[in-house]
Length: 219
Image (cartoon, rainbow, N blue to C red; front, side, top):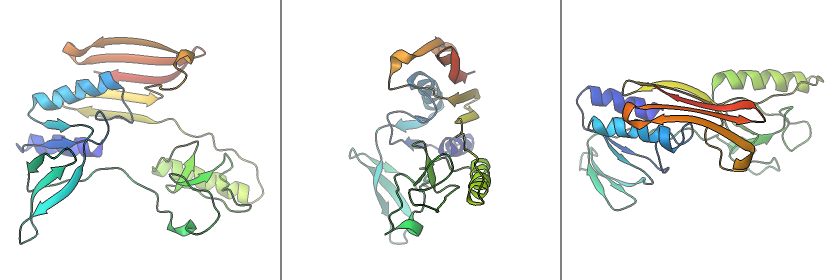
């Protein structure tokens, strides 16, 4: 999201922008194919180039170390004198390096914020709960409170979080939350949707056992 908003701001200043996306579509973490395509088409209609399933492998500079171009994984070279890197965050796991504490994307914790080692708790941007690392301040605060209670002898459970985003790109307002693109056990979900790409409109509701578990709203 940060990268796309930066791209939009630079486009508004009249700059020619190229977006290099490692995934098979933009906003892959929050949107499905249809929603992503609406935003990508809008960006491209305003002169932005979007390269998916690609990444930068080399940055070319001149003698003064000023950037001149970038080379992509597929061999394409894009001339540029400005590069913005917006690839998310990754937990710093140095604190547990060499220890027996279980790590994956982050330090793995249970619903009591306990690590795999007795008496050791973790909270905040460094932790992985239920397969996810979500590095935002409100969750870090909540996790720290729960870890503190349990370290002091209490018994409070962390219920996890629901991913949600509300952002406007290319004058297209969007909202997404929850599970927006189920990949596993699809038969367990009921999907209701209205898709009008020519109007840049898309509505999708995902239900499981008659309970809403995910929503995408575009325009």
